[in-house]
Amino acid sequence: MPDEIGLFEAIDTQRGLRQFKPDPVPDEMITRLLRAAIKAPSGGVRQGWSFIVIRDEETRRKIGDLYRTGSRFDIRDDMSTQQRRVYRRAQHLEDHMEDVPVFILACIEGGPGGPVSGASIYPAVQNILLAARGLGLASVLTTRQSRFEPEIKDILGIPENVTTAAILPIGFPAEGVRYGPTRRRPLEEVAFDGHWGNTWKTEAE
Amino acid sequence: MPDEIGLFEAIDTQRGLRQFKPDPVPDEMITRLLRAAIKAPSGGVRQGWSFIVIRDEETRRKIGDLYRTGSRFDIRDDMSTQQRRVYRRAQHLEDHMEDVPVFILACIEGGPGGPVSGASIYPAVQNILLAARGLGLASVLTTRQSRFEPEIKDILGIPENVTTAAILPIGFPAEGVRYGPTRRRPLEEVAFDGHWGNTWKTEAE
Image (cartoon, rainbow over all chains, first blue to last red; front, side, top):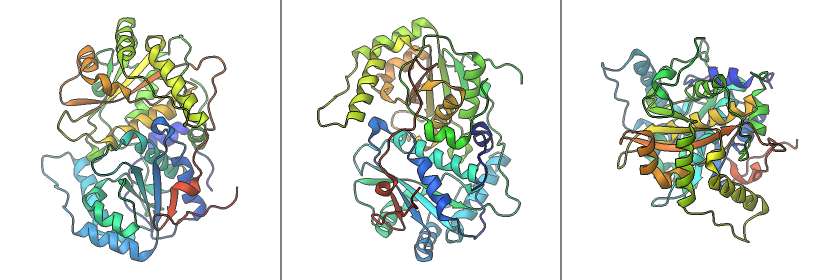
């Protein structure tokens, strides 16, 4: 395992990486990601989460075939350069899903018609992404498996009262692929002091 | 600021802490939490998130008054000791909301009737919780503000097309309050290898 990196270094440089080496990922690294996941908060300590690790070729090919039938990203001229680049890479990933060595599918109890709480699964997903950053693995949060919810649940034998929340592709980053820092809307636009619209003042850095 | 702690130390010991000292939290610490938040992934890089820092007494009192009118936790004998303890502390917190020195209210674009994506706000919320752990602050993920959504939006001037996702109480931990490790359902129950029900095998630790 790589040396432990600092918390804030991990947070500040975590970034969606969508290009992977085909090399397998050691079991103990995957276990470390999963152990990170289940440390996240869970509403009422219910822990209705589950995580399916997908590595076998046939399942990855089935998922790849599904994704190629899905809606494509709508990449428009009025988007920012950053957005267009992200969407192009996301489309490339979806066209070649079976090339990713590992997926982790995060699920949460709560079926069709019942309440599904993102608050009890996406913190665990974020822990996986940060842990991947910490181990030098590439990953990215994707939720577009929801387009194929019934098919994916059928392939993986997922019970009716369980909903798929995210698929995280996992692998070592392809040559030349780097972690952040990422560009973000400035804090001044999104953080408020006491009331909507009242800018949170930060000291110059 | 405290020395930086390791990523996995933060993940493994992060825990919902619900008892706070009344002491104020330095601005630069709050800014650090907010900077951590906006490093999280956001679907399509849209970043439709916002974070309101609530510190003034009158607003905290209004929120405290609201919470005392709300439904109470249903603490039952058939719950585990851990769950009952968590619920009792959560009820105590809700009965004394105005005693917490700071709240961060996390919001996401997407109004009533529109789609709201937890995947684009709860990763940011988890970054705040981990950053709080890193800075030696107490916090806990709560979503029960949704019971008072219209009132809270009115108090804080939040636009109609924005939804409240979570309130994070923030402060220094009360005397004797400690971070984890937390107890969790074992990985073997919630992690699967290739197919639902097929236990993910881990090496003995």
